[in-house]
Image (cartoon, rainbow, N blue to C red; front, side, top):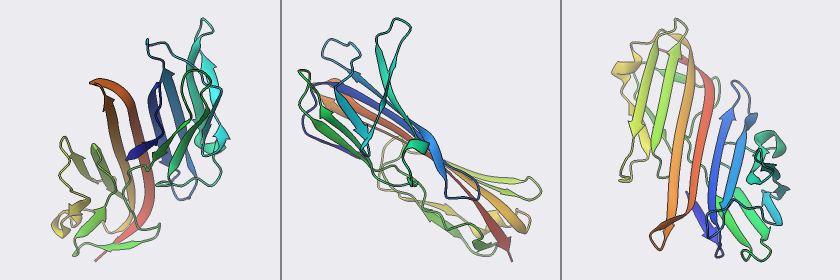
Length: 211
């Protein structure tokens, strides 16, 4: 979910992907921000930052403004679920300063080496008004258990439920856990698309399935 502080006089398209490396707490990814003025031209502002780190300006083949970018590696210590702050500190003549506050949606997972049991239901909560939640459990023989939840109209559902009878189909031992959560949100202004955010988080864990 996201909120806008201030009144941008530009349209902002924010897109990001954060991926957790298997077996570690290291997070990589990419952030991309496009800004458009009132007549649809892509623009750069004087000072745009992500969590206080200046973003890089990219131009197209004609040397015109294209987008701002930043990698996950350029935000030291960032973790899945951390609040992301986009600051337009100096908009020049185009817009007064404004700020985006973005809380990425994600599944709340137990840590690596967690033991789950084939005779117990598995319940995993997730955050935010998501569009899609994908969870895949893969045993040491390559057999998969996959849950794909699509939410076209958010009704307050905030968890994935896997009954024990489905876990029984997996082999005992190590289980690889992979998630993919997509969140897309928009703020409309005067019937026109003004601000939108697309954020995807991917997590990886190694658990153990026991009787």
